[in-house]
Image (cartoon, rainbow, N blue to C red; front, side, top):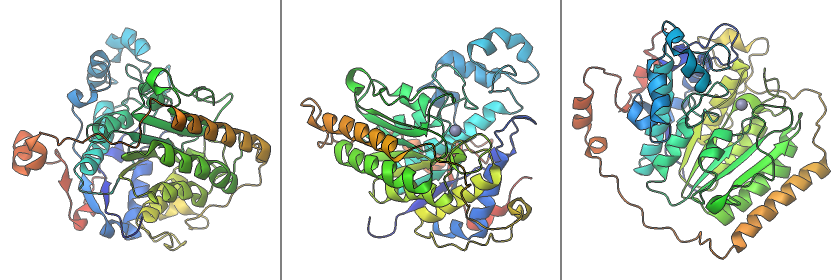
Length: 426
Ligand SMILES: [Zn+2]
């Protein structure tokens, strides 16, 4: 893309304050670390910064079942005994990896509202790139929590984008398979999902290369299963770039949703890949190069100092500032970056269990899958049906929106003055 992209950033200061529990690897606090790097690198000055609205239950049921959202909105650590049957049914609680913690529903409202606001700004043409590092919870199912994810903000954002765009591409570089998103759109040709992930004796167990979709969606799920230890060069050049290039050529999406799970980085507490920020961000930069409206989301990431490094650097990359200093600027969480206080990571000497031949096999099979799609006579993907305008006056008129939510000043998407970004609750 030539010329500068307009970038919007969605951040709610309450989101990092939620706590899954002492031994749980998911730490929303990582969002605050990332935010402070983004502030102290001065990146906020070049973006439109928004405080998102908390998504309402009625927005969540656009994808999730009513009884599941109803349960999510009511269950708390204090009343969970009366919900024991529901907890089993919805896969939540202490016997699962999706605990019921204080403020759980509000947490889901904030990260989901952020993704929905990002999608809306893209749909309205107000921005080229929308960033929500609190989103990307790709494992949540229609009626079930899974893998630290409760409400699937990605599916909901894609549904929003489909109101305006004929085809939406979902790209997932988290170390885990993007199963919740794939499942939601498995039978449609309007959403293509592309996930690169560790496969074999690894959560969630899905994402085999031969899982390509069903019915109208046959061929529209693209899965690249990998072994442990993959490096920047092999991940990006041997796989991501050639497959992505073919996808853009064949599918020609009107919008892209990119899940940037940082558990694919070297040294992640749960992951097993060996990517540095440069390899991970090369994917982000390549997606951006197509100049298609893009919603950029977070996801996994369990060595939180590296998650913050990654998402701050990727914010810089999206702003065409990938040369930001390697020295971490002094900030409230500076001690997290000891002992080197540097931005970039060094890969470990571990073996890359993905041989050149195996990678070539995966690449060849996926390129063939995409080529077959292009040849399918019933699929006319170059024609874009006319889009329609949203008829919701409330989105256009800030007064109406404000009137609808005047009890809470944080409600409703609101553009922020840079000075406000430091006014946070600690
Ligand atoms: Zn993950």
